[in-house]
Length: 114
Image (cartoon, rainbow, N blue to C red; front, top):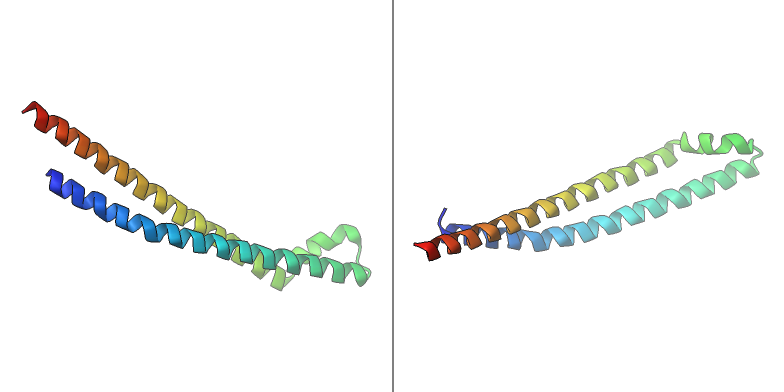
């Protein structure tokens, strides 16, 4: 691979990194919002069941079996996985950038020896 090709790939990876960082920020905010909705709904349901006279020892199990609460928890967990996948993608881009930089350094050193 020529230094120009390496530089093109390096620049492409750098260009891809900025939008990925923005995506990560949006995904993190989405995850936090989903967690907040889940926790608020969970707390409300616990209070509702406690006021209804349900056994305190069973409330936590009953609440987590509630369809709405389970769906909110599912959405939160899914957003967490998507956020982690985006972070891994960012890490992969950083590795690609470091690799291209190393290749350029090696090419310069090789050209200096000739």
